[in-house]
Image (cartoon, rainbow, N blue to C red; front, side, top):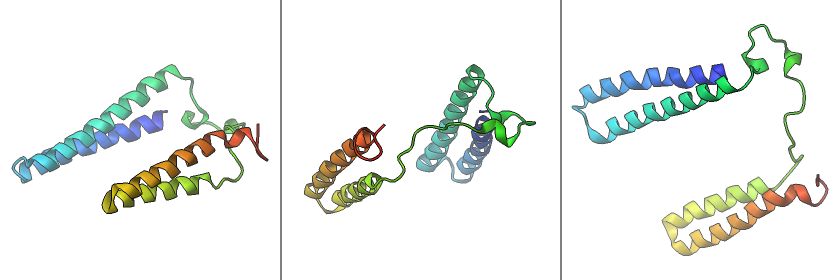
Length: 132
């Protein structure tokens, strides 16, 4: 997790000076300065979490500079071969966002479609052709 930690901490090193430059340039305009400050804090929080988690876990093959490609072979988890459920989830999200602009009745319809799609996605590995 060293690479991920460095990535997020480098972004903290980018956002802190950008926040200070923007603050001085805009005479500490509250919205932009707050957004940039919160961005820096978000990257710092994520980098700190990855750093602490990386200290507790053993080195991954990606973290070994002298590692070989075959060091990372093996099972990465179980994935359903093909599924239409993410399409239904994306459609329900689009309906819900459109409902925010059009009316709450459309948002509620999208929410019901989304609840059904989430249930289908959770239980699709327990039935049918790809059951485990």
